[in-house]
Length: 334
Image 1 (cartoon, rainbow, N blue to C red):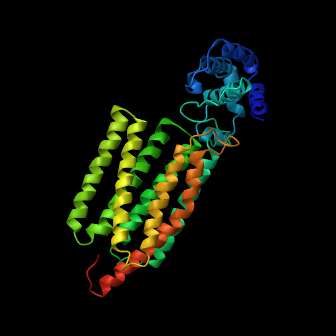
Image 2: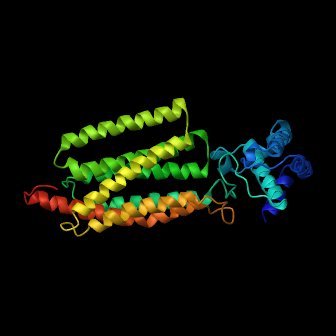
Image 3: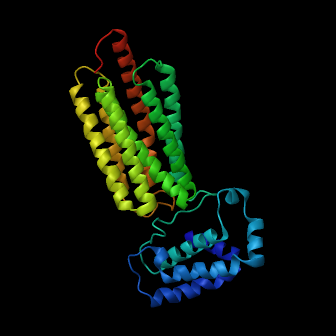
């Protein structure tokens, strides 16, 4: 089925019809390494020939006139289509020769749907965002503004919504800007999560402490973004930094849940959420070629987090109402 799809693209680019024969020869002459597909000579030659034959002069005009509007609006170019074509030709040749599916530009090959590069991951990001929005509306309708955690929780929701929006955009169209926004906004959620934890566990009694901690987190975020932007975009460092903050957040919340297990009947919701989120994140370790060329471990991870939002906001509602009632009775906030 993939080869048939690739053949359709070959028919769309007449000059590329000779490429399979050329690429077979390259494949037989060059040993296959474990590197990503875009580093292979035959893939690069394929893209170069396709661009030369189809992305200049009259052929380019024909491509632009036939290109759907939604592809133009999302920034797809003739060169991008050449890369997509050559990716599938290369995948077909790898499979025909008995080799494993290679990655291209750091990603597995996905079947494009309309303008969506990774359709299932984009859909999953949208569903996560909608879950956040629905539960934010429910939170604001159930919790009065007088609750001590009201504005902190609402701000966390806005940070989360922004992150899921950029996640959806990135999985729709992978560019330099959308990739950076996806990574940076995800880091912002992780840092704000630990700030939310600090405010709830310490800041209600020591507001100056939570304010200083918030300033520290802002400086850390600014340093993190500056390093990745102006020094080196290191994927390993970015993952290590987010993982370290996530583990601190996990242990902090679990200690608070354990300490309040006898006084707060809803403590288990918080414990379940942090354990689920960190446990489900392990799905990222299952790195495999996408099933049916659309469903990979990353997409499964995003899909699995959708129900967690409902449990998390249920905890926030219960806890915010508890704090409000405690405040009204003139008792000490804990």
